Image (tube, rainbow, N blue to C red; front, side, top):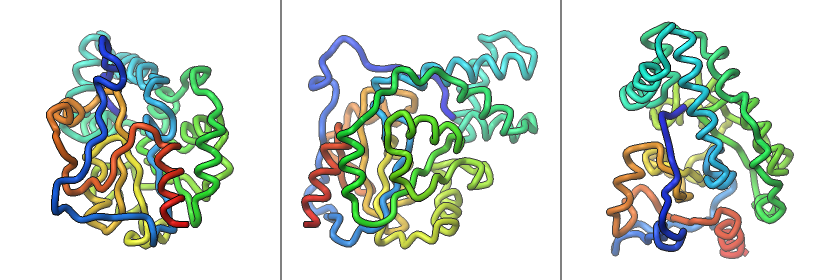
Length: 256
């Protein structure tokens, strides 16, 4: 789970978001051999404009304040500190305070999903993907099931690999990806990984996956601030899109 996040305001979507391309000479990857499609959940399968993480973020602060018996402001400080130091707030709480992760995940994911709308266009494009389809999230299986169900795409996925299935080791840890690949018998060189955080695409690239950055206006990680100054994609990101359904349509078309 993450620390505080926000959506960029004051400019149009076209002004604040740009689709970047790889540097000249970078490795080119298409989807001709792809038969395993792996999707992150939050701000990837659903639009970041839903702002679900505002709810999750607030509930993390509430949980920490109650669990540790500290003021909410101090809880928020710990939440952000653990996120930066350990990769996720949950990992920090487990390491420092020996927290039972199930209790935390149940609480922070008890959110209102009314802002998530059914996405028939996305469903149609995912259904057209040849091969296996997986959701891989740092959240809980129940959260992924609820959100994918609201989107109307849950039944299209073979399985969900959540934080518990990886022994509570989160992305971007390399071992977390190794556990996911092993657990689901994924041939990385025939897989594609879709993520909203470029840091979470580094290991998939190393493993041989085709990587796709689903860029959005949501900011909850320092790397997203750094992206504002990017002029081209880093070598571990093969593709970038602002619209997942539109991109999938083009990706499927390129295989046919």
